[in-house]
Image (cartoon, rainbow, N blue to C red; front, side, top):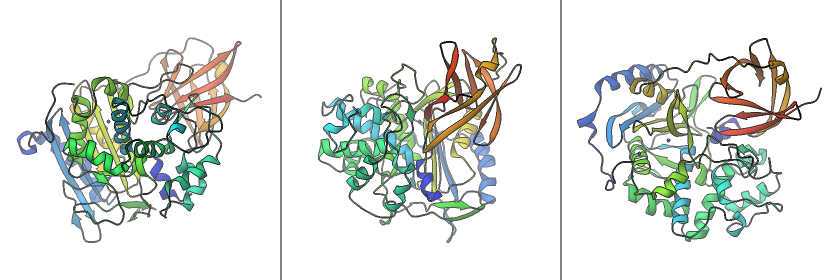
Length: 460
């Protein structure tokens, strides 16, 4: 599949209710030292043309600390990027879709345990797949952005059920609820369910029940044909050079990735979602941010359209997005009320999550996590080759054991695993554990946060 299309699949507040759009004026609350730090961090990427432009927003609760833009909305005309510019936000769209589904559940229009075939004409091959399993990526249904045949659709506008018929021809990646593979098909289907239940288009429902309620004036369903004021152009990177983003018809990202927004709107969204009852009641909100579980009882680090995790020991609710020409990151630290939104109108080597994390490092009492504990048992029992399904491909892992360490070979790279205790090993932000049966290691579980992959040990 065209590499540009794969980018689409890449890959976040409890006090007082506020009226729509109630937000402190930026000039009254800007943190000049924070601005200087961000300037130093971002400007070199602009000067070296590693990115076209970047907008960043930082707030504590409803007080804005910084909203600023850098670089260009249009490279050809060297048009400066407005601070209010709207960007395609890719998979950050998913949390809006999840909130819409929970609003409908609050109204009694659907139940999260409903089988999807109550609302969709889709052959599950005899399996029961629930709405909840679409929300948390545990349905097992093939992700359409990982299907080679998706390139036949990506540039054109067809009826959306055309894509459903193609997905039906694909085998399930796993039985529903047995594992988690990040999946755009689930959210595509959720958009169709919203339309079936409400009789409104996905765009109409979100505009009336979320954007208008939240006062999000620069948030809308993206359209590659409509001219929008202050809309940033997107760019891809090839061989170190910025080029106009590859075309993708917005029929297809849909409820999984077709929204456009600005940093100011996303700050407001995060405040209203996490700190007020304006969009969801508390029970629905707690469900939204509660990590899901597999059939086995294993708890994930993904809830419903949101990752619920830790950053250097501090709780964070977040999600990123990637779509042709754009990268995005939005995160909320519930213990500190800190919101950070980073939007970039180019794909390439600069990660918006890295920018957000550097800001978090500056503003929060964060300490680097050091793994010093040693596994007390025999490491050699874990050595071997493991294989299983991951996103869009099979994953093959080779574990090698030394006297005190395990190493992992994955996709041609060899790294040392850090023992994190409780029979788990860390690889960056991923965690690896092993399943023993009848005295022998049978499985390796790879918890990537955005996926939970179960790999079977291969016999010698």
